[in-house]
Structures are given as C-alpha cells and as structure tokens.
Length: 183
Image 1 (cartoon, rainbow, N blue to C red):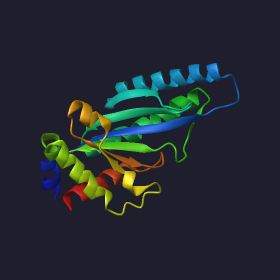
Image 2: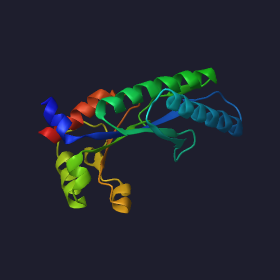
Image 3: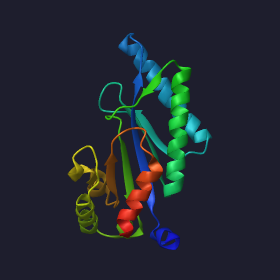
Image 4: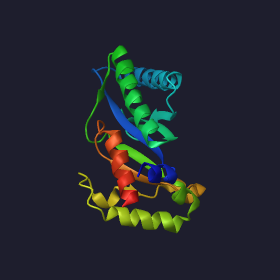
C-alpha cells in the first residue's frame, strides 16, 4: 500500500484560517500589532524551513490566514503543526492569543499525478464522487469538496477540501483524503 501511495505523487496545500483574541483598544492599534504578528510568523516559518507560501488578512476584520505547501502529505502536516505552534508563541509574545472556533476552518488543496495531468472534467467527476461520501462534516457536506477558481483560471488541476475547526489534526485529514483516492 505504501508503494501505491508513493506512486500517486500526492501533493497537499493547507490554508489555515485564524483570528486573534484581543483586549479592548483602538482598531488601528490592533491592526498594527496583528500585522507585526503575521510578518513575524511568516519569517519565523521561513527560518524554520517550513514551506509557507502566504500569510495575509482574511475577508473579515480580525480574520487571517496562512498557507503551507504544496508538498508531500507528511511534510505538509509537519509544517502546519509547527506553523501553528509558532503562531501561538509569537502572538503570546505580543499579548494576543489565537481564537479557535468553527469559523477558523482549514482548507486543503490536494492533487496527485493523475489529477495534475488530467483534464478539468476528470477533476470535476472526482469531486462529484467524493461529495457523495458520508463525510460527517458539520457544515453542508455537499460543499466539502470543490474545484477552486484557480483551476479554471490557470489550468492547474487541483481540488479543495474544506474542514471546520482550527485544531483539526492534519494527519487525519490527509489520511482520510488518501483513503478516498485509493478506494
């Protein structure tokens, strides 16, 4: 089975959403500190050898995200765990803590050699098949697997899996996704 997994050449990208627990103060002050935390976190990840590709503001106030990968499943999981640890430590140095609630979900972009070299119809068929699996996702399961807009704009064949809760174990997510592919 290990050889079968390796032959698939899986690639994973994690996008971790998060928010800060802050004390009551001026919005501009919080925004300045939040930006310092994000920048410090990004540089600390780079220094630690983590495959971090972005760190930025989210769509809503006090909502942020960073992305890990693309890299192999185990490396992506290891990098995400260490990046979360660094984020918590750096935020605490500034007097902030990380909020963990269901809006702070994780998105996983996954591909393998068949997906990367296939056509968009192949990816869409796979997403449809995977959405029929009982995912036990607290959100609408029909939206758990998606073809992200980047595919139609760039032709880069991947698909996205959305999972709720910040503290979700990335190793379990990767294991579940690989099982979906192999079954």
